[in-house]
Length: 352
Image (cartoon, rainbow, N blue to C red):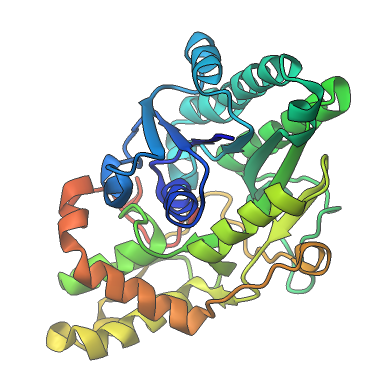
């Protein structure tokens, strides 16, 4: 049995790969193109583990994907490879269409050809899990939560490309019978997140005494999910989820962007007091186009059907995250200490 993880050198992907290698028995293969947000540094702790292999490849390359399926004969595919930064999608949508739509199509075709070549028992045990986002559902009002039945209303090129990839995955199950599952998650946070996303930007800028620019009034609301709670949910979906089903994964931790920034500042006031109070660094800047006001997901289905529970609450997770960055500034330097916060130099972008 071999597990294949696309995008396994990125933030969520590398967390999943490390969990699979450290806590399991199956061989794990990481496929990653190593674009700006993917780094071998994220996999350093398992680089010498004999059960882990790394393949530098583009998921849009059909010949390369077919060759890797033939080489490794995977029983499970976790498909995480994606362009995921909303602001980058506004400035340059072509890469998002190529990776998120064409790349997912290519992975589905390679998986289908591989699956059709398996024995009956092997084909029954094969799973393709597509990891998506709550952004495909668009914007919520002040009440309610997204569920697995919510209509798709994406607002940005990023979310539209992910919505399209979700539909492709469902089509390959309904048309060809490929055993797929889909998860839609809320905002992830935790160690190894590339330094352009909200929390690492706040932590690193605050430590340097730099401004913490926040979009609009900072009242955009997101549901926050600790990354290793997410990866535990993904593994559970593969093991127990029903083929063809969608599962929402959230942290039950809705907070405004400004609350998150202020919470990080308060933690840093205690742990890195030289520039306290760090809240004095907060500045408000013009909002980005199409910035959805609120997302929140109802994760009742995965809790009741599969028994998943989050283990890290928001306060504990934020402290763990700050502690990790303070202890791993060498990692920040290795992946690029000059990384863009986002293309408009603002805080408040999608974290995923």
